[in-house]
Amino acid sequence: MDNKKYLITGAWGKLGRYIKDSIESFSPTKKEMNILNICQMEKYIKANKVNSILHLAAISDQKFAEKEKLLSYKINVLGTRNVTKIAKKYNLKIFYISTDYIFPCTKGNYKETDNPGPANWYGFTKYAGELEIRNLTENYCIIRTSFRPVKWDFPTAYTNVYTSADYIDIIAKEIILCLNYNLNGIIHIGTTTKSLYELAKIRNPYIVPEECNDETFPKRRDLNIDNWLFEKRKRGDL
Image (cartoon, rainbow, N blue to C red):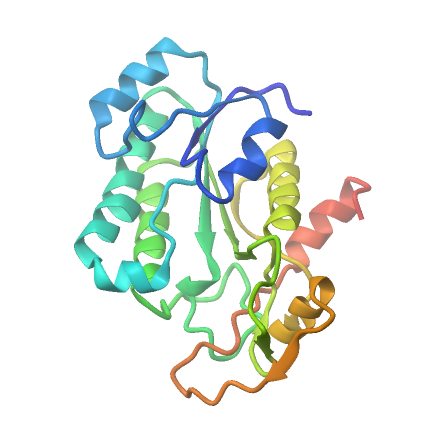
């Protein structure tokens, strides 16, 4: 494993729990280090030998973000600004977890170079977070990805909604690989494009297929992962 010491924001969230024990890291709770409190962050950085920041802390529930727009903006945008300012000040690389929702999710196969057009408020705040990072530092890796809980607990899954997402334990391993590669810039991480039904059936063979008839529902969330596959192939991990 990489011997870097990562500071993980949001380490006790859904994704952080699958990553924090697999890398050399500091994993403060929100009480120990709130990203909206830049002085508290700086104090934590000074007290611990950190090489890089893995920024996971965010409001990621799309419905909650839509309902609590101001709060989600503060955490996803202003919080990311604080994290980036600290990273810049102490010459730390920042790895930022972004989302497929920065795209409109209407045509799919989105490449790193495609122009964003957020599908919802959550996607807007995450893209705004990307811009904060890109405007404040050159030492970053923006990871656009998506994941599902480790088990598919719903009785049905859509056959006409497509994604490059995978289960959280799978995506966590991919992110750890990306950290080890120490990539720069923007990278799309995921697995082969499939319908939600195909994804669900992997871990729930009894899943019932269902078609999504909601015209407003994002049906093509799949990211183009060619660059990620190239990086894995280059290092013998594929």
